[in-house]
Image (cartoon, rainbow, N blue to C red; front, side, top):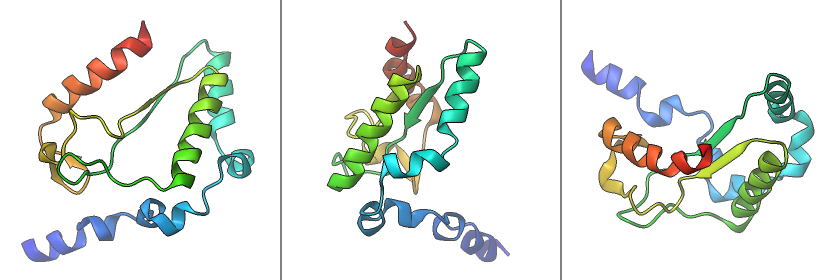
Length: 132
């Protein structure tokens, strides 16, 4: 039973979007092309209508030691376009990629952190300036 549960809830079985993290899939990423079918404009408009500020955080995928996961050029461009668009539309954006306080040793399995409290401390320090 335990083995069946472990196999069933393995990261590979849970994540249908793993391809989104692969270099080949990132080659098709195009923020401007995808924006018209995105919920982002609706989310930012609704937040603006209610006087709220949204904050988007791109969490870092599991690094290798202290080396952050690779980012193909198109993914870097996509994230830059996303950040620019969000900020131009009144939202905040923080990217955990490459944060030296988020080495592989803080991860438990897959992209899940081992010690939530330690991650929360880093998260708070990184995001606190955005809300001042």
